[in-house]
Length: 554
Ligand code: TEU
Ligand code: CA
Image 1 (spheres, rainbow, N blue to C red):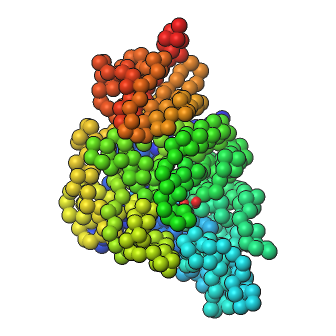
Image 2 (cartoon, helix red, strand yellow):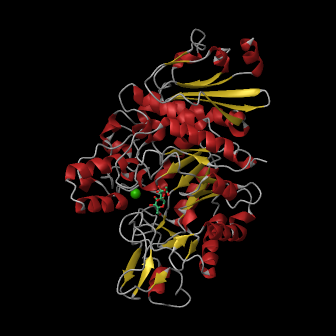
């Protein structure tokens, strides 16, 4: 049985630093989010995932937590969070928090005590002696450098999957697991209704002879966490960020009976163009490969598990710049097409803040404009390899997570209405034309397209429980698929290119009323609803009854 609680969910991801600043210190905050609750309600989203809001030295903007029970003072206080939760509830929106449990900040009290070998924190992290005066055997950390870092006080090396200031917790230590379950329970009591578990497939590790992730251990630990915390309240929604998950393991994580999570984020779609991997040289986005993967995942997960669907997040360049086109005239079309493609799929759709108004990558010119620790670490690495500043900026520009982190564009006022003070990261100069104020009352805007899309997604049940069928799988840029159940079917057309196509007769809509949404407005009009010509970046969703099709085939 599909989990009913997921039927109508559309989740909106907020990067609090960059959403809305209420006190003009240039940093977005909780009161800022609350001040835009009407906007979020009007958009129609059901849950807000806030990236980490806990106390943090911000080496990795909150993904380095120094206290899981305290709100980062830059974002406000615990009472601000309570007010935010109440305000959201009054609009039927719930709050999802981001739990960073694979690692903490090196400033966390547990780490400080562990360094000093203080009981019972001694084994809270992964410590090893050096070998012949050098680090134990290990790989390169995700954000550059070796996974092992020497600690002067303890005179041992600690293991870090990400940055050196993000030491990995040792989940094989029962007390670590207990303390983390306590954290979850604390926030559930405050009225938090969802959790995103950061980098969760890295928690299970074999420690000897070398440190290696171990999926059996991850399942074991997650199972225990579920039992001791969120598993006690079935209404809570959980999503795991599982960077390495394939179909088989995703099924296991999200099995409706035995799974540990409601859904996972899988990254196979997002890794296709090599963004943020190896040399940071962006490759062509292979649509045929994407189609094969979509088919594989949609058919393979259906009735067996569930996933979160996304094309953008705080960890990737902007989706319109990456998969669409910023060329004037195509920004709206390609961005709405991508949204339509995504919303048609099985799984819970996620919207990353700003994607609903078409925010795009920043026109970077210098390395000193970047703030992201990953980008800066890579810039350093490229410089060491002898690359010139121009090439470094180019690679960062195509790959950097800062593209997604520039301040939200509310209006064409100074700093895009994000703040009255200078923002922590520069505003994209296109804010004069790309902003909420301009789009909100324009019926033809991307924002209003998203509102309609969210509405139909909640109304039409085939989005939730329709099976999946790929149509025209060989076409190298037109995505065409079906969601069906019994004798009802929903078709989704999404042209990923400027090329034109002709749709086969048997697939043409039979009635203009059957068009649920279309990004070319004439597609839902009497004269053009059944036009077989598919235009650049055209996208629409329509119902096609079985009978209509059979009649046509006679
Ligand atoms: O990200 C984990 C991570 O490295 C992903 O960015 C990666 O792309 C994915 O696993 C696919 O391989 C999470 C957070 O989202 C990110 O912002 C943090 O920096 C990171 O964890 C460390 O906490
Ligand atoms: Ca602020």
